[in-house]
Picture 1 (cartoon, rainbow, N blue to C red):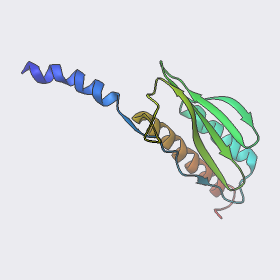
Picture 2 (cartoon, one colour):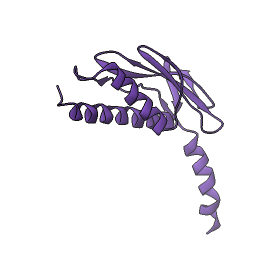
Picture 3 (spheres, rainbow, N blue to C red):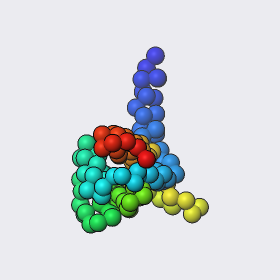
Length: 135
């Protein structure tokens, strides 16, 4: 009876330490009618909503850090008139390793950037619809 209770914390630790291939999310297409100011605003709002902190903002690129506990990850959000692309830059304490030429990172990273990309995409679409339609 006690054995399952003793194994549960060990299994949780093993699951928490898993890594997965690091894959940047696909580009987020932008409608032709959206302004660069709107794109920057949407990216900033999504980053803030998910706890990311902007550390650099220049035309075409916003760098952001997510560091809620004893780990951190930095991403670059590149944008132009056609698309937004989120790219991994660096991390600490997220088990980043390159094995056989392929980068791996903690499994949570994928969820964080996927949620961010989905939110940005949804906000772009809502903003476009409010401005008069989708191209």
